[in-house]
Image: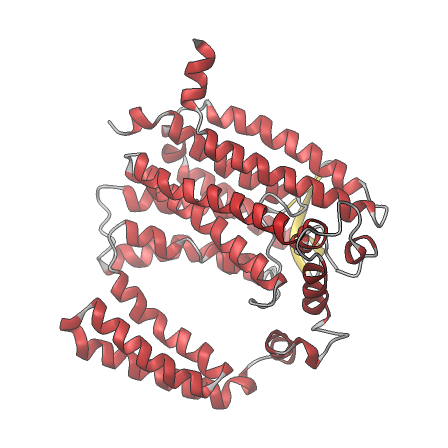
Length: 410
C-alpha cells in the first residue's frame, strides 16, 4: 500500500521521460568520448547524474512553500554567483562563465535561469502586484533582465538569450496584455527581417497587419502606428545594419545564411553537423559506428552538437524517438500548469517549460541549419554537470509541486 501511495505522488510521465532523455545523452556522450579517447567526460557525467538524482529526491520531499518563501534569497545568491564569476571566473571557450569550487567547475548562469524564474514568479503572484501598471511591469522586467546583463558581460550571448524565453509566457499568465507585447516586439522583428531581406520585410508588413487586426480590431490606428515604426526600423536595418555590427558578428550572420561562403572557417561547424545528421539515413550507422563522431569531424560533439551523434548513429528513427520523448516531456509540463491549481506554481512551471523549449528549439535548430550557431546545450543530453544539475533541480521542483498539488490548491 505504501508503494502504491508513493507512485500516486510521483508524476511518472514527467520523471520517466526525463530519465529517457538522460539515457539518450549518456549513450551519445559515451560514443562521442569513446572515439577520441576522452572517456573522462562520460564518467564525470555519470557522477553528476548521481549527484543530481540525489538532490532531486531531497527537493521532492521539501515543503512546497519553501520555494516561494525563499525565492528572493535564492535569486540574490545566484546573482552573487554571477558577480563572483566576473571577478574570479575562469575563461573557457572565450567566455568567463565558470568558477572552480574545490573539485568541481560550476557555471552559475545555468542555475540563475531557474532562480530568476522563482523570483519573478513570486513577484507576479503577490496580491499587491498588478502587472498592468507601468511600475510593476518595469519591476518584473528588471528582475528578469538584470542577470541577463551580467551574463552578457562574461560574455555568453547564447546563455543570455535563453533567459529571455520565459519573460513573455510568465507575464502573460500573470495578466499582461499579449497584444501590447506584440506591438513592443514589432520594431525588433522588422529590424531583423529587414537586415536579411528587404522584400521579406514587405511581405511581413502585410501579414502582421492582418494579424494585428484580428487580435484587436478596435485598435487599428495603434496597430498602423506600430507597423510604421517597425517598417522604419526594418528599412534602416536593411541599409545601415551591416555598418553597425562588428566584423565577427556580421560574419556569423553571413555564414548562417550561407555556410558555403566560408566552408573551412565560420561555416565549418554548420556544414559538418548537416553531413553527420544526413549520413545517418533511416536507421543510422549504429552505436559507436558514426564516422563523423568517431573521427571527431564535429567540434564540441559532446556538448552543443550532441544531436549530431544521435542523428548519425541512430538515424531518422532514433532522432524521431528522441524528439517524441522531448514532446512528451514538454507536453506534460504544459499540462501541469493547468493541473496544479496554484498561481505561483503555474508561473514557475511556465517559466521552466519555456526555458526547456527554447533550448531544444535553438540547439536542434542550429544543428540542422535553421538557427545560427550559439552556445546553447541540449537539455539532459549535452555534456555538462552544471546544466544537468540545474535542469534536474528544475524538474524536481515541478515534481514537488505535483506531489503537493492538493495542499497548493487550498
